[in-house]
Amino acid sequence: MQLRDATEADLPAIVAIYNTTIPSRMVTADPDPVSVESKLSWFRAHTPDRRPLWILDEDGTIAAWLSFNDFYGRPAYHPTAEISVYVAEAYRRRGLGRQLLDEAIRRAPDLRLKTLLAIVFAHNEPSLRLLEGAGFQRWGFLPAVAEMDGIEYDDVILGRRV
Image: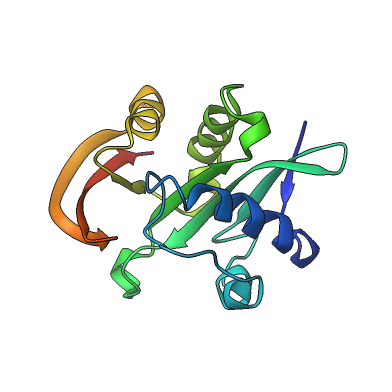
């Protein structure tokens, strides 16, 4: 398994992994699948030296990805990044999410980051366990901030100083 920076050619696979999580209503607040075109500006906002987008590649197949995203676009927040981790269905429960998180924590100081954040649905116990197992703590709770299919969802904010 090779960890590398994502290229634009990887975007269809990144989007495909993301879209597989939508029906469960566990992982993302997008109620409908997204297109590659709709994610181009998001992809281009990532740079290897400041806000990378990494993939785990197994012989040409993207098994998982992690993105560092700006948190609250004002300059004072530049030392903080929100991270997202997605694992392809066929590769789940193999420790790939933890591998990506550990690498993000290890490399965060090189990216001039002091704090990593994650925002997770409160009912997404697997992601909460993953993040807490990597040393993230629950820093906030946002009740009923998302709504899909007429159901309200709570978010948990997790953070870790690095």
